[in-house]
Image 1 (cartoon, helix red, strand yellow):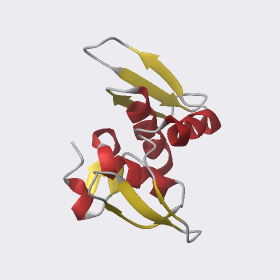
Image 2 (cartoon, helix red, strand yellow):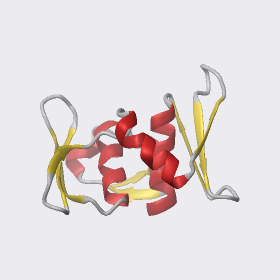
Image 3 (tube, one colour):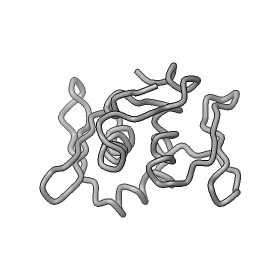
Length: 121
């Protein structure tokens, strides 16, 4: 199903980040609501860059994603590209940055497995 990058959340967002990195072989949501994936390298791991700074932080640094806080009502905004090419908004800096990353790599709309779309909002 096609979902706007700016509306991705939870497992669907993490799946899209993995896909943007070319890491995803297949994935699914486990009982704890986390993305449980097998990477294209054959390794199996939990991949949650929208929640885990140890996974999302290196993406932000590598891609030089800039973050700005606009207050409680508006939340966080993330920008990528020397001349802003992509942007993401979210309630946390990781969500905003991962939405921005997905948009910069995959475009404004992303194909997400139907079973994960329930997580997009």
